Image (cartoon, rainbow over all chains, first blue to last red; front, top):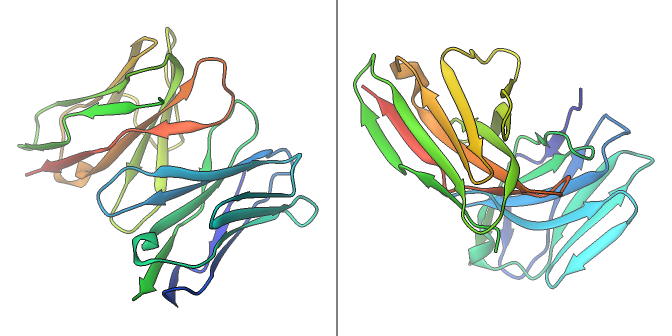
Length: 111
Length: 116
């Protein structure tokens, strides 16, 4: 089955700086890669996703890049704000199948 | 759109009792719903995949008789934790996928189960 690894497990940045979270996957059949943000005790919220036919996708301060050859994808948050502090999960799946989640990254943005 | 609700949000029960958790897709039809378990500061662990009108598919290591899943309609799936014990205490989250969609999942707010 698929194996998704996520790094780092914790990340602290100063407000205004950028944050980068990286994930690798093992199954070349995976073709959908969502990123979720989860605040303490709340549901995971989809913040951005990318499909395997695209190399990069951007939505305001958030961007995701995908390298299919290397089997890795990354989340980039620019101009970080305190409200960006949360746990971020990456996931990988092939069409119609379950999500395989990474282990999560706890992001702290220091004001 | 794509709102998923869960009920109850919190439940405290005595050891040996059964607890039912409901997951509803409020504004869309969900042919597939997923049940996850999440321990503090850990990732989401898939327990089972629930397809409307058919038996749930359980992940390895998840006891079918312990965690009963029913997906009777396109908007409702239920998870029943039978004869709950303290080690079943956890955060249970469901997610739902649009009918006709093959990827994006939308999560419910979760249910905090505490077994005394």
